[in-house]
Length: 261
Image 1: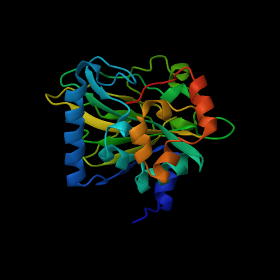
Image 2 (image 1 turned 120 degrees about the horizontal axis):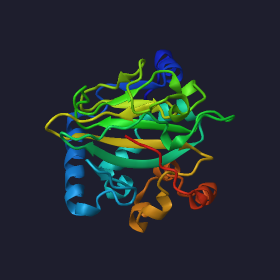
Image 3 (image 1 turned 90 degrees about the vertical axis):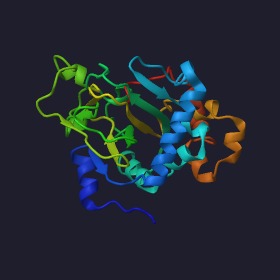
Image 4 (image 1 turned 30 degrees about the vertical axis):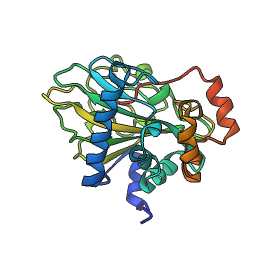
């Protein structure tokens, strides 16, 4: 069934910069995603996440579109695409699809930041992110903190704050249950917090950019030919595989990654 955002959901994304959707991932899909990520971590071993970056105190996987249909289902989900369009407008594409798990009992917190270090410009918003919860996000296990409304501040947190690592008086935690999805205008000041529990905190990140921005991970270069040949027209469009403009942008990009939690 096609998802249609309510006026209140659109208002929250526009005014506060975030929205939490409950129960998007059903029990069977959740188990399949958990199984697939665990298997991929075993397969890749110490090279896991190398297409993007490795991170101390965290497990990472990157280039997930290339690693199974169970991941491809994420980026063509109707609710996700509608929300991305509400933030970025009709011209958008996938920037990256990654996995990240904050390791147990680790000091893996982040400063407040905007993804790719970008501010909105004359064309509007340029970045949108979504966090797909494979575990509950709690105050103890590294849930993302954010400052509501900061996406319209016109400043990056490192420009406006004395210490972007410090707690912000207006910050909140994005809390939810496994299966929920956090949608975010990625100009919002946000950052991961430390996992103080004995279990990893697992999530997927489906990150989108406006059409005139380079992809965070250049999909055409990363995806194997057999994967590209198997994709639907919709997925090819979302991945910008036939977009010459994207080819030029991504090849010229110096790899602005920013933080993605």
